[in-house]
Amino acid sequence: MTYAEVHQRSLSDREAYWAEQAALVDWQQPFTRVCDNDNPPFTKWFTGGTTNLCHNAVDRHMATRPDAPALIFVSTETGQERVYSFSELHAEVQCMAASLLALGVKQGDRVLVYLPMIPEAAFAMLACARIGAIHSVVFGGFASVSLASRIDDAEPVVVISADAGSRSGKVVAYKPLLDEAIRLAAHKPKAVLMVDRGLSAFERVPGRDADYATLREQHRATVVPCTWVDSTHPSYTLYTSGTTGKPKGVQRDTGGYAVALAASMKQIFMGQPGETFFSTSDVGWVVGHSYIVYGPLIAGMATIMYEGLPTRGMDGQPDAAIWWSLVERYKVTAMFSAPTAVRVLKKQDPAALKKYDLSSLRALFLAGEPLDEPTARWISDALGRPIIDNYWQTESGWPILTVANGIEPRASKFGSPGVPMPGYDVKLVDEATGEELKGANQKGVLVIEGPLPPGFMQTVWRDDARFVKTYWQSVPGRQVYSTFDWGIRDEDGYFFILGRTDDVINVAGHRLGTREIEESISSHPAVAEVAVVGVADNLKGQVAMAFVVLRDAAFAADANDALKLEGDIMKVVDTQLGAVARPARVRFVNSLPKTRSGKLLRRALQAVCEGRDPGDLTTIEDPTALLQIKALFTPA
Ligand code: ATP
Ligand code: MG
Image (cartoon, rainbow, N blue to C red; front, top):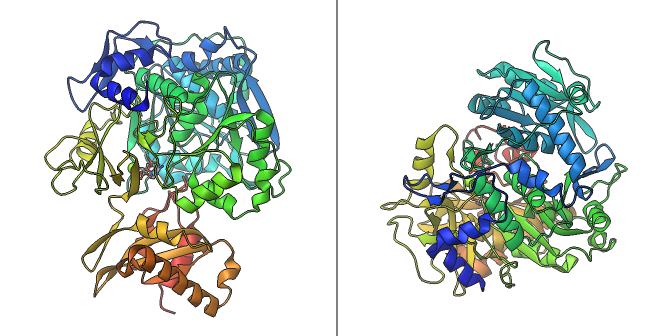
């Protein structure tokens, strides 16, 4: 069947289509209903069925591939490297599960995981799934305040943490941050399970803090069978990045998620059992949940868990080829990363990409933010492999738009993530009227008609009203799921994402997407990264302000160079988009303010430009980026 036929069938014969996909995973009790949409927008998948995510990711491979690699841990921070086979993973997960049970965790209880990228993070997630506990992984880079708000929202019985993480060789102590977060939080977890990496000495709270090494030793031989849970049983909660405001606690089911991941591994990532998947994300993000831990393992693949930077080798020395050395060593067939990481590599020596044998690699998948054409072309030329942009959200759990080469090989188009994946009824609507835009190249809000496919969020954790209000009531006159992203669809049905609905600026009555201006600026060869925001202006309402990180700071070495470059960049925008889109100023900066997941924080940037308080900065990666920009706007 062609892609078009498969996609059509997934919508017109939804039940039959998903029942077939459901055969990709094991069920204890078969489901009695495929899609229960009696109470929209709360769709239930595979009701009546019972299953277990850990069984599907680990146990079921024990019969066929017990000695095959499952989890490959590489840390360029500590110089550790270790391969766990499926049977070793099976044993480790049971030790962790037994430890959680010993600490009183029961089915439906929440377990908050606040860990660096170490194998115990995967053991913890799988152990929770195994016993029917709901995990809530909080990115290890968050500090006390962010962590405290998540503790209060999830109300975990147990928190699993470690003494420390490490970043660029610097030890980042976690325990003091966790202790402070628990002090700040209204909810107090019963126990804290500590993984001691021996990186940073810490104090134990008597009666509360347990030592994982001790519990693991005690439970080496404890058998913990999988708890069969209803398909609709929540497997986890996870927060969105917080790019546009207060993060939303996304709640996901079990059965629908397992099926969606299994189908996506086949249709999109084309992963075969025995192959190796390498996602450079973090377990704290949705990509880490779906495509470091669950997806590859469900598919019987080995998955690489990498702690470290893309530019630092095992010996702690600069090495821009470290990722590619792993591709060679572990014969990685599919790699998943983010445009922001590729832009970091773009500033390095391109020869790094040629040092290793990358012949195993079939494709590089990139997601998380718009993939600008120059970056896409650069990495595509350098790797000589297809670059597959894929568009999705924490909410969706798996790609909404991309190309499904596992269904039918299809060319990607630069600048476009692709076409809707099976089960997604994607539409563009007029923001003001809610009317569907059916013609080619009309710009509208990207929405999804319910029922949403398996794997999609069930609700906002403990806040059904917020789920309905936030996502389903923003388009006038219709109940559709809004992605809050702008898009267009071309004549061939390929979508292009034009930015977030709150990233539109209004210059003298012209509505401009900041993404379009950024795209234009990034086509200038000197530019490595750019952010454009709208800044209040007495005359024009708003003007565009551009912040550029150069590939080589020497390009703007002195004031004259900078002025000339600013003029050149403005000319590029003039020619490509017209003078109305020309930024009022182009400023050269060392770095851009980003969320911990590497997304531009335009909201904070704009506030600083307008002399306002940038608000909650606990999710920001590098506060100095904002300080430098603040200085530009503070009169000397
Ligand atoms: P919040 O919802 O809390 O503001 P967030 O939207 O950044 O945070 P995520 O769920 O991590 O949190 O990100 C999803 C968003 O990232 C999408 O809605 C879209 O704006 C952007 N995005 C993801 N992938 C792509 C892509 N391939 N192309 C363009 N944009 C993308
Ligand atoms: Mg979002």
